[in-house]
Image (cartoon, rainbow, N blue to C red; front, side):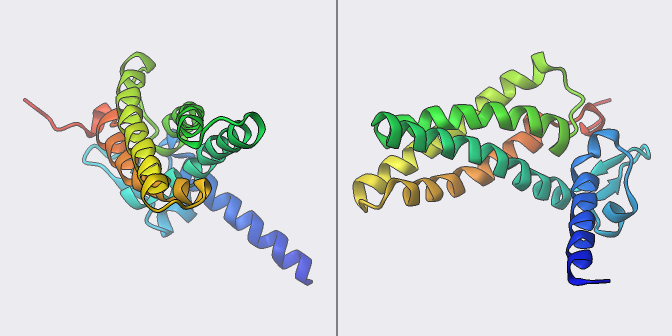
Length: 181
């Protein structure tokens, strides 16, 4: 096996692990995802994604959504001369749309209907937007760093809020809700 074959082989393993982590919507664990501890059995025997597995997928999906956010931000600031704070707010909304679609399907494998999950997601996204814009504006006003450096700090500040609120409230499957009988 040559060096190119090893590189291709590692890409296939990474792709397969990503599919194993993020294809939890099937609720069927792959051998790789079981070995990595990404799935955990529930009381009723249905396999669900563990916190670690869903957080890893959330980071991957978030990377895609963040790319949409940052591309919009940079296009508005550099291309149209819009200020960084409003441009970031609009970019955040674009990223939130991308994030909703991908997180609902891959990260949280939600069985909630859109009419239930989408309003919840919008509430969480509004909280994330407030954190994002607030931190960005504060860093720009207090420290005067480049807007992209400030945006990275704002993104990190919103990351844990978005994951926790979406996992525990927005996309929580009905089967994982406590039995209230």
